[in-house]
Amino acid sequence: MTKRTDTTRQLGLRHRVIAACSRVALLAGLLVLAFPAMARATDIESRLDRIISSPCLKRGRVCMVVRSLKTGKTVYEKNPDILMTPASNMKIITAAVALKTLKPWYKFDTIFSYTGTRKGETIEGDLVVSGHGDPHLVSEDLWQIANEVRKRGITRITGSIILDDGYFDGELFPAGWRLSSIRRAFEAPLSALTLNFNTVTVMIYPDPSGTKPIVVVDPATPYFKLVNRMTYGNGGRKFVAIRMKPRPGGGETMEVLGRIRPGGGELIYYRAVADPSRYFGDTFKTLLSGMGVTVDGGILNAPPSRATTKLFVHSSRPLLNQVMDMNKFSNNFMAEQILKSVGAEKVSTPGTIGKGLAVAESVMAEWGITQDRYHFVDGSGLSKTNKISCSALTDVLGRLYNEFEAGPEFISSLAVMGKDGSVRQRDLGTTDMVKVKTGTLDSVSAISGYYPLKNGEVLGFSVIFNDLACYNGMAHEIQNHLLMELATLNGHVAE
View 1 (cartoon, rainbow, N blue to C red):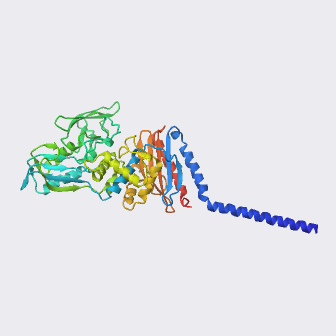
View 2 (cartoon, rainbow, N blue to C red):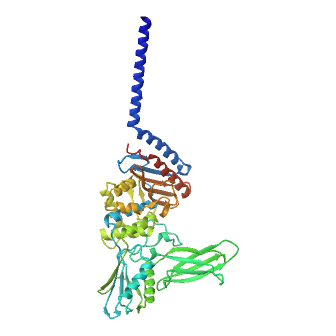
């Protein structure tokens, strides 16, 4: 009896223990089912934190935000609200504002008209060119424009070429730009009349049959008086210097000096011009002459003093294409031209950086992004005075992701990691189409964009490093590792 009772008690205790263990196991299973993302989130947080703890970043400042654009859930954040210098991530704002306000199909017009009268093949007056800030008018376009004049049966203009660039103000550079003395192409001046991004190409070739190298300026234009002081040298280091200074009466003198080896390859340099409108005018007049169109007068930079008759309009490619070139190759000149055009179209002429930024502020306000989260001074991000938080940038990316009218064009404008644009050599080793905008200045590196997951979700992210203690190549490697970690979230974010 006692033995039986003890056995019964033991069996009862065993059952209760088993039941209790089952309840614990069930509860644990329910907790795992209820909070799998929490465990995984903690795991990815620790991995991202570990990457960010790199010595490269210890002395600097870091912000990072990763957010599901489907659920709005924040997957990871580090200093999300501190104001950071975004470098060329500023172009995300410029692109967003332009596409939303001007619309993707907007075109930049260059208007050609004339004063006086037309008699047969002769215009007895001036040919007037009125620019509207086309950011991508290149030599091929100008050749077609000159040909269009000839196709309309015009062979002579008795007056001058009048350059009307009053659509923009006269400020050649945004505030906050620290200009170099060598006229670097990425800091080209702004103007309503442009050509080749207001830059010139200088090519240097060895000439085996000559006593010194060949120097060629493209486009061929009387705007430049070329002075070739290049020499050959088998010993010592190769060097090239390009000096440019204004010429009396207009244009510039370009002195190219240095030393190269006779058996070396070609060298190519890009430099910004000092007087964009005159550069346009001199090159245009030369092309007209090549088409058989004679211009008796000179080139004047002023609004027309008499009434004009429209001849034709040259329209640019749509804004969506312009924004794609701007973002994929991080073109500073195009960003500032587009921003001034926004100001001219949406506020008043002449277009200014300030007017464009006023429109940007109104768009940010519409999207619920307050001014304490950013400070803008230009459209390209070349100035270190620009500031924005990673959370604000991620908010903008989220807004664009859900903007039917402008969002698809913006997303398409971004460079694809390992495929094209500024990140064609930054392969993450995945098949994911990670679309980004990069930003680089001295001690600044940024990358923001979209990371698509296998389950159909898309992450919006922004990563900005300021006050770097290492070179930008190392910063890029750190950013790449951060993004590679996001691939481990496939299928788990929305749970």
